[in-house]
Length: 194
Image 1 (cartoon, rainbow, N blue to C red):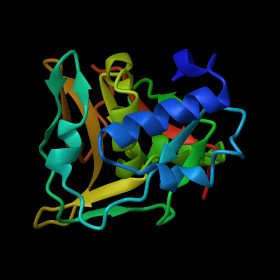
Image 2 (image 1 turned 180 degrees about the vertical axis):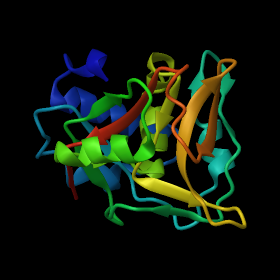
Image 3 (image 1 turned 135 degrees about the vertical axis):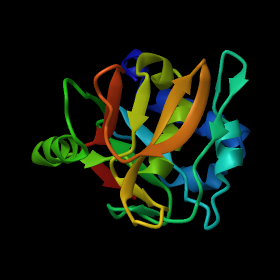
């Protein structure tokens, strides 16, 4: 995202809306009410989440060097642990929280919250990767701490993520954060406004 800081807010907004509209994820009228009140810092426009997510289709919209994304995550048991608006919204003051050393989900989540930030949900993370796919080249694996995936018979909670695997963007989930051999991040924002 740092490479987009030089853009004026209107340029960034127009670029995001054009990319999302071209992928069929929003309509111009979803964005119109924000157009005259753009924040000065880095932001991401998030369109309304569809009631029935098609993760296979969404991952197909993420493309890096001609390779489209693939989904390995079942919809059953997927939930957000932070509240997000039902309508379009902005995520303000974006930051990719670089995960260092041997850490756990709890330590990363605690650090984000301690700094008064909100972790990305899976929906926000997928939108980010569709609009700015280069985040996946900057970090091997990107965790969406604001969502959980519980699908097995034991009911263990897992964290959704997108990673590049052999240059292919992939959506899946882990029970633990395997930080040792990757360049992982957990993106967050300072505020959500709708």
